[in-house]
Length: 448
Ligand SMILES: NC(=O)N[C@H]1NC(=O)NC1=O
Ligand SMILES: [Zn+2]
Ligand SMILES: [Zn+2]
Image (cartoon, helix red, strand yellow):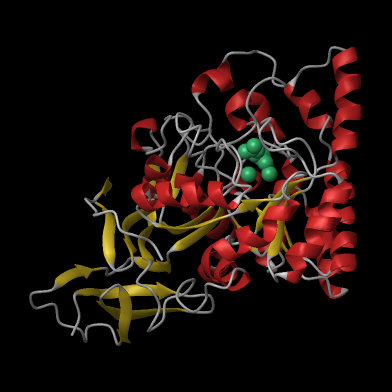
């Protein structure tokens, strides 16, 4: 007995690609069998011949900004964008919403909004900031997927960066409850020092901005947090690394027994500093985009399996915060890109560089599920798992148009870019939420 059947698709898991039929019942995958074996009859049936079926992506790094900055993005627009991009679970960051998610009450309030508005599954990060050490344990008990801290200024006044004392004390608590700390690792001291020099010398170009946040400032912060992890035993996840040098350092740390994982984002794999100079504000992020050689080296480490997770770090803002100033130092740092993540990986990874589809399934679904304890239900395609998957035409070329975006603000450095590989259907918990280039009507459901 099935309520939905997907016939003839090429199933992509973390270790193989094979043709099969899928049978779903009550939101779960209940059958995986020889292609052609499941007959439709009068249940919902999709013929996926020629298409590939990936596990629904798990985007562990999104800023959807509710409550407080819903004019920037929100759970509804954000999660519709994800559905259109094949993402079926997201982890919402604790900052850029106002208030930030740093107490139990704030966590509950955000969770309520996510329940009401998100059309895909979600988890919430909690913040580690200088004044909330007493709240960490409660936030963990409330269901936080982990904690996020900044080692440099975050870009908003309502999320303070963690000084060393806060990091050490916070990490010992996070270790005690067996949670994980995700870290924005850039050295505040180095950035401030270099920015002061740039301002004095009136150096305000895109390249000047990048030079105030050099790779060595990431390395210094990563070195420090690795040592703090060694001391406290706290599991850590290094967010959005922009350079192979960081990956190399993390490989050594793993070998030395530190419990650390590393993430990069589509923009570090798609754009270099050259494009940043052409595009300007829309491509501003922190850490900044790097030289072309770094882009290639990051792909090399993905190919080798040394980058655990790819997430979007979708951090949009209203257009005026991007365009009101000609000074790149003053514009919002954050890139809108969660809808195009899978297309970037298929185009630049699979088609251009021969990255296996299984590797793409690992970094977008299996590894995030494993790292954050979701593997019982998510992260792969197997009997018993949640029916979260995305059916993709991996050969379909298209040019991304602003009107296709579900973001609150239809601006992104990826608009106008040509991709190969487009989402045909997205299923979450057995329901089709995206098909024929449109979000399908869905009853908002209570997650978890
Ligand atoms: N505050 C915020 O979202 N910052 C993010 N944006 C970005 O480019 N890097 C970040 O950490
Ligand atoms: Zn960050
Ligand atoms: Zn972020």
